[in-house]
Length: 233
Image 1 (cartoon, helix red, strand yellow):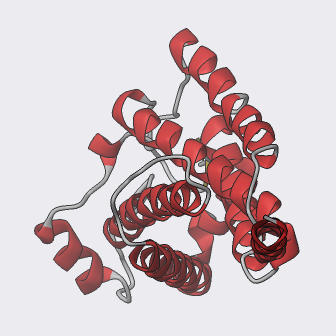
Image 2 (cartoon, one colour):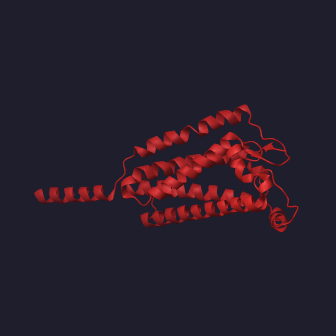
Image 3 (spheres, one colour):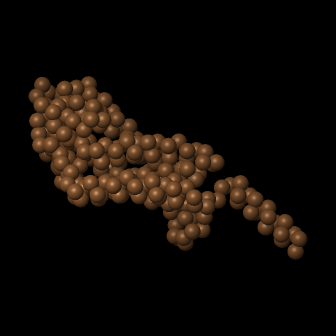
């Protein structure tokens, strides 16, 4: 029996987050693409904020209240994982629930630290936090995000190998799992919210891409300009 588990908004978020973070992470090493890096960083941050809200009032399985986070659930999941009759979870399993929440939490910190770093470097706000500290925090959270994603992917592959009949991996694309449970449903509010969810991040991306960013070349040019102006005086 197939059950509709992951709604379209949840699946769209999953893939947009994966694409957005991957591009932002890769571009972080290229000075000439700092505008794009910052734009994708803002895009990811807003996506996650909406996902956190969706987790509070979204439909079943996407709602945080459906996450089996308790220690009892974790023990039962690990104990029965390799058995012939493992306990099946329609939505996220206990370990995946913890990883997903960690990804969202670290993702928010990474985005905020990235914005604060931009604001400090470009004199947008006087935050009063050391620039070096912000840079280190942003880099650490980005790498931690990557590690968590790796753990998530490993879990998906393990589930594909040990519990292939459930169809968890395919559900990321189709929304359906081979499990008997209640179908997820979107109400009118969910649909309107989703429209905003997948519109505002693109607006933020556009606005962030257009922000003035001081590259090292610009800083050197400004320093040289000030030097020559001072000498002329």
